Length: 79
Image (cartoon, rainbow, N blue to C red; front, side, top):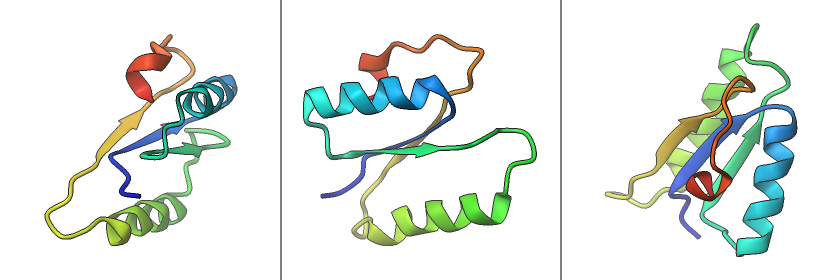
């Protein structure tokens, strides 16, 4: 299955999104849970995003969404 969206998030937001993704049966949304946004391990993040890019067929596109704990995102818009 091709990933169409990668969501970077942390904390409770991840669990809310994971639950909603499961309820909707979404398999094209990758959730990446970060322990913290500050002191971000850039190399590890780059490796993770490179893996998504490598799995994307030529000409395929995917979207990167970053959600921090200060925002109240609408779950349905993210998954």
